[in-house]
Amino acid sequence: MVCMKYLLTILAAIGIAANVAAQQNIISLKECLETGLKQNYDILISRNEQRISENNATAANAGMLPSLALSAGYMTSADRTDTTPREGDKVVDDAAFDQTVDVGLSLNWTLFNGMSVRANYNKLRELEQMGELKTRLTIEDFVANLTAEYYNLIQQTLRLKNFRYAVSLSRERLRITEARYQIGDFSRLDLLQARVDFNADSSQYMSQQEAVIASRIRINELMANKDINAKCVARDSVIKVNGNLRWEELSAQMTANNVSLLISDHNTNISMLDLKAVKSRNYPYLKLAAGYGYTLNRFGSGTTKLRGTLGPNVGLNLGFTLFDGNRRREQRNAKIEVENAIYERNQIEQSLQADLANFWQAYLNNLEVVKLEKQNVIAAKENYEIAMERYLLGDLPGIEMREAQKSLLDAEERILTAEYNTKLCEISLMQISGNILQYLYE
Image (tube, rainbow, N blue to C red; front, side, top):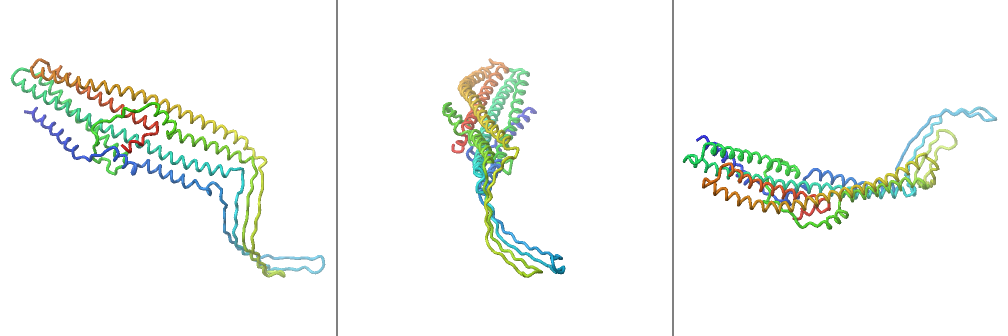
């Protein structure tokens, strides 16, 4: 009686879990990605940083435009003036209250400084393009992570289904054992072993629910859902693997489209522009200064009471820095930075080629493993059916029946793991080759 109550409790818990799963929101991979692209905080931050780099890429920020200033001033002085001529008496004037009022516009413009301004502007444009690439890199990382987690949710859900199936098998075995025990065909040891196996499978099923919930929470986190515990299940019920990838296409696409390589190319260009900016100091500079203003002077003494001036002024300043003590050192260091940028680019490309080769080999191996495990699942199911028939006839001990059941579950677990590992390899290959955004259109 106690055993029956315990059995009903476990079955009720499993039934409640299945009912809750049925009430969850069903969502596809495309819907997850579209939601995340709008809400994910890493993407939002990256897009704002891209906007900053776009705002900075202006001719004014590079120093190509003149500066125009408006100024006004007032100055007064009260001086005592003693004048002693060579002939005549000394003249003392203690009422010399002078005032000056001026207002004007001033324009300053660097017309030439050895192409440094042009190099700075091109550098800002390179940084603007790098901002776009960094946003793309953030989006690609997000798509890869969410796609992997989406299929992990499928994997964990299928594993939960397998464990539920294991519970049903153990429950049926326990029912048969109890019935045979009542009529004396099975011993109490057989009954206790069947009950232990049923309890173990039930416990494993309950624990697996935690893995499903953890994956669901991770998906909500990546999508930046306000309700991190929002109920959702994957629309797909199987792990779909693309078995048509080609090495030659992936390798060529990696060289042309990988974001890390493209960013590295821009870093190399920036290093070259920095060298060009340093070399610009080897050339003379030419600056323009112009203005237009009005000045009023009021004199407290002397023969002139007021004097006003109004008009433009313009001038050119041509100069050349003969020696500053740092120019050669900075040029040598800038050349070294260019070399390092080229080395880093080659290093990144080599590392990507190694990753591509490793994931490609793992991808091929896992495809073969999937084929093999599909055959194993068929054989394990047939083996279990035969074992169950013998068990019902009393020709097979409970331990061997349990082994047949375990072999079936292990085969299903291996093929599930192999499919998921193959999918992870596929996602990595798509990301390295610059094709990860294709998951948005599936």
